[in-house]
Length: 316
Image 1 (cartoon, helix red, strand yellow):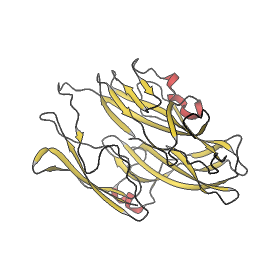
Image 2: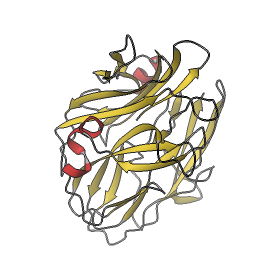
Image 3: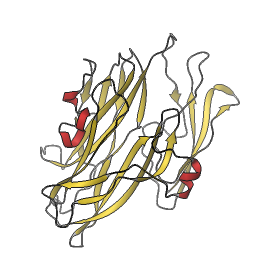
């Protein structure tokens, strides 16, 4: 995910903050809790570059390497995020693009990857500059074959703009995993308004999904203000177990809720996950790990052994 916002509208050129979050293969970029604690163990390589027409003096925006903030050995990924500033004159529209290769081995598509965000420094009708949406998705989502899933694309817009989710549709936005290049199950459907993806996998393996979020100034506007990418993996698995009831989250706060944390504020929550199939156990949790996030080891609830508990702490 790569998004942006204007943080200083009185300067000339404007100061724009770029926020990027990336996940990489654990084998290539191994990470540990000790390395995370240093705050400067970088994962990933390559650069975010401008494609013409570019603002003056901007060709390469920055590296896509980010400090490691989390990892999952079972799912073989590491993830991290950072922010950096660039200076752009007002009244500019341009794209920042990162291209590379080496997806996991996919059921369909693959080879090259590409991701891009579109930055627009024109003023809105209210005299303010836009803040592009932020999208948060798990790097890998595990799905059992032959079941139908409705996957919510988690979008937040600080301007409270209307937004839609579409399939990424150009080589700059999606490389070798554009929708037109993929052979997905025939029932696959993206509801662009609700941002919910319906997916019924048949074949076991990895699927890459590349989407773009557009935001609009009002309910009737047809001209988008920005394009924000989100790409993630669906890992499909099979099981002979006849029970298909998934674990459920019963933690401290409601599911799918945004929690605002002030800079310098600490937040601690208990996460509870209830296993609903007989004789099943929870052996892994997949997460997105922001900077300052830590997680305890998992233990069983002493009053209900079907409930797995761990605490998470975030220092803003």
